[in-house]
Amino acid sequence: MTLHNMESVEVFASEGKGRGLKAAKELLAGEVVFAEPSFAAVVFDSLSQYVCHSCFRQQKKLHRCGQCRFAQYCDRTCQRACWEEHKQECNAIRKNGKAPNENVRLAARVLWRMEKDGGVASDSQLTTLEDLEDHVADMPEEDLKELKIDVHNFLDYWPSGSRQHTVDSISHILGVINCNGFTLSDQRGLQAVGVGIFPNLCLVNHDCWPNCTVILNHGNQTALNSVFHSQRRIELRSLGTIAEGQELTVGYVDFLNVSQDRQKLLKQQYFFDCTCTHCSQHTKDDLKMAVKVVDGKKPSEEVVKEVTEHSLKALEQIEKARTEGNYHEVVKVCRECLEKQGPVLAETHLYHLRVLSVASEVMSYLQFFTEAAEYARKMVEGYMKLYHPNNAQLGMATMRAGVTHWHAGLIEVGHGMICKAYAILLVTHGPLHAITKDLETMRNQTEMELRMFRQNEYVYHTMREAALKNQPMSMMTEPVAEGIKSLFRRK
Image (cartoon, rainbow, N blue to C red; front, side, top):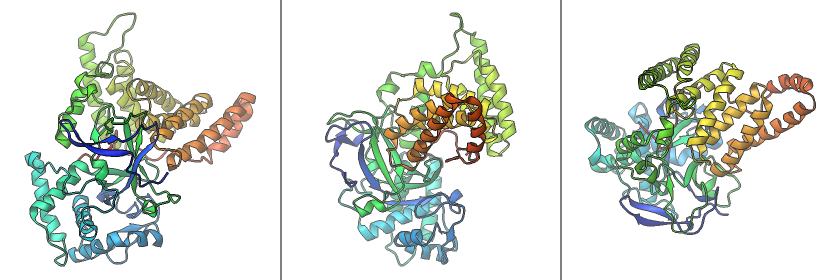
């Protein structure tokens, strides 16, 4: 299969949503609908020293560009691959004395690229950047202020030798970045490290229960078309069978919010009113706010109100302690909160799931594996009742839970979860993605250990100690204070 295929899709006028994309033929679960390299992309300001500006991999030791001293690269290969994109930026940063913020840097890269290649960089690009929505007219006062500052900084940064642009055209590009910028993750797919513009992806409309998912696939050296050896490209993948003529959709926000909150978020960030079936029918909202029923009896409204308020306060405390790196405080607040929630909130209640998520992650980091595993298991059980069976977030959460069980020596449950996660990621990420390959290694490892465990538990536990010292993949990175990652970039 060549990767520059746009023959699976066609542009059409989607009712009430402007343009959209629909399937030009029947698509099966896990099929790559299309792949697209970034038109332009930059690393986040906060990570500019830790991530390669060419391939977006996180590396311990990076080499700085000797001229601007801002851009960082894995090695000469990455630096050479990126020079075309960095050349004008390099001069501009030197003249300016420092690098501007990520929005201004991305806007400049977009405009330099348009100067070089025009608004359409390849024959498979279905729309120009001029035609994308910027929603500048819909922006609230606060955001407009920020936009004006960015325009001002852009004008200071933009070299006098380059083609000059009007305030309107600069505002347009900044507006497009604001509502169409796509978050790029590192090679493991575990942390958001930058933002890019992918014109074809911008045409895919939102649905809270989408039929496609987007992943970043960092380069595929086996691709026939050398355009795709570039290390930054997204793949749009179908989550199930999609009939010919059906609209293709992705979720701009996480489904793990009640419909009213998702609608509010979509309105704020993307300026539209979501009328998808899951919003109109409030699908699964009851589960997300459900209380525990014991012997047909529900807790009183006062108790529910008290626990709900306690949970919200606790989540704020947790976020604060986590940002400060005070993980023992996080654990203390989580334990107290879970004890309060236990008899009152159902296993699918959002606040309960949010606390379980942080608790399992931070306790894994602190190596309280047995307790972390119990919380992770409950979290995944809740997620499975709420998420689409092929949801990437569900896959990642199941993988983390499987790894935690494995670390806790609960090999049977651990292996089962790793297999389940592998099945989901085969659809959402595909067999060649770095994270799917890691997962396959883990699946083989846990399968071997499970056989050993069933033959002789004592030998297994002795061997396990040795195996843990040399894991194929450590998920015990320091917890990132990001909470639930949204796919598209939010402020």
